[in-house]
Length: 453
Image (cartoon, rainbow, N blue to C red; front, top):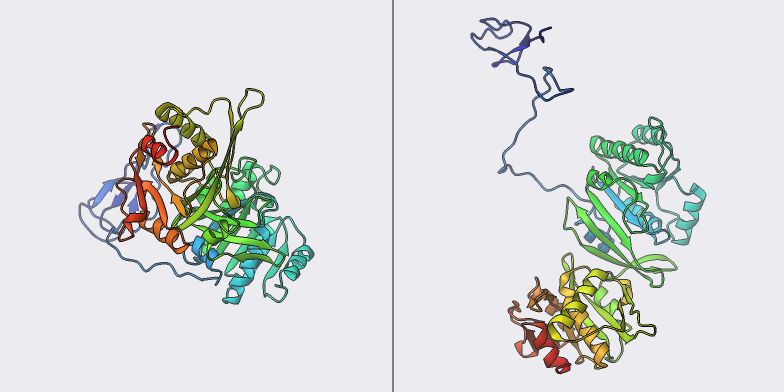
């Protein structure tokens, strides 16, 4: 059986079942052409049915930047890229008990003070529990609307009746969609709920913030497609033994990624930290062996932190490698380079490495600071006082320059550090060159600071 054909007018777009010399709709001659199938692959295809024409624009088309609403919480606004964008969807993940609900309740109160109508929907706590937390934080007078519900159909019906400016859903894993047969928290439910809330945000011009549970590996639980759906992905990090919390942007369509905001957990909630470098170095005393100060970059801001290393004989001949706040695989690489290129063995020695203050460092520029801390601990020799270290180490033992050297040095000088050890060839700007020690390779670095080893 032959497939039916479809014809359309190239002038006005009118369709007809057969060819004709003149279009009956607009009267144009020789404008009727046969339509080709939209897709011709095996199996099901789009067929001949035509859709609407999508408007096309040029790359040179200029558009105004999206409007933003600032919360007046500088650390939160920094991570969001300057404020909250309407119709945006933000996903916030973090370990249980780290302070996600506290942060978002404080954020909700801050945005209401800026005139935004805010609804806080909790699928984990009753409204009375949220009021108790708000009372403890001194936010009981904030005009935030509360709801304790997990049925997404009921939630969206309520929101459509009186559309707010901001909706906070805590958490996406507790939402239940009656069109999906699986249990709440399953892959299908989480994907469908995230899709419905994202569609609601885009069609109603409402900003939506979703809270997401994380796995034991620290990744947001559920299908990875959720992170692709949303506009911004934030991780709330911190060690339980430290009061400091880091809000890190790993994805942001409206601002820079890898930006961080620093908070301190207190009895009255989370307070923002405007100078994290001074906070991370606050408890640092006199220089001791195994300590090195690293001048890093987190997003757009320079942050100084302390690497602490301890090297001790392995009691049972099976050396341990323990790392907190840094990549364990990169530590193994640094140890291999020190042994292979510099002849400094770590066999039979336990190695412990820690980033003070609970900060997590991921940039390769910390390689040289880690090597300095390890060598200082192994040789029991403290680094020169008031010294910061940064640089990337290659497998050949060369020390490679890193980006934003001037910003790193400026932050170090602001905190009273007068010396810096950095890669050769770095752009240092107009700083005092006499206080800078440039190193081209790891062998020179070891020889100048710790002798031949």
